[in-house]
Image (cartoon, rainbow, N blue to C red):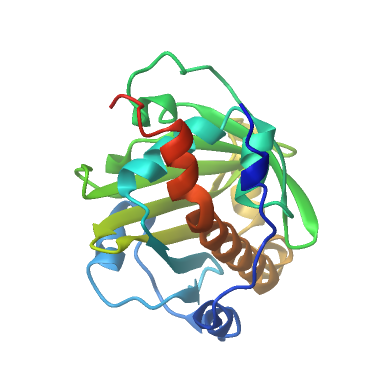
Length: 253
């Protein structure tokens, strides 16, 4: 399988993305991950939001011409097992990717990624992160149904170096006449946890100290993630319709 023609250079971001990146962080209470519909169903501008507990919500929107929700589900099923495919998505920041189990025999794209762990290595800002992205059902995020008109890619994010779950994410994709609009949401710091009960208790108590939480989770890390998301999603929409037509349009769902 030759994918070299899709190894495109990362382009400049649209002006509206740059304007959002330059915005001040807004201090406000925001809905939790399991109340996602409250964000989707009311005006909630792109940007970075911080609550009084020093947790963050990031929202970024990407207009994806000629992209359908089905293409997004296919992309997540298709690219996850291979680093060379993962690097197409962000040629500067993405380093490597593999998955916890092979679901390639499934006839459904969503079944190929929901329930698996994607083990990735990537730059976010100037730092390299080794992450476990655990894809889960959208209903955990308050999304009750997905179909050909909309899909939701939802996951828990764990730092593999420390074993600490650090974030939750959702990419909600809704179909329009021109293609789709993707709304990406990240919750950082509001559900930090560790599977070891003793470590979990210690971490939770430690993060109650405001300045310590600020050391590990701050506006720089939130803005770096916002930039990364804008870059990879704007880059993806440039080649996804073509690569889907070549490799994915005959997949069964």
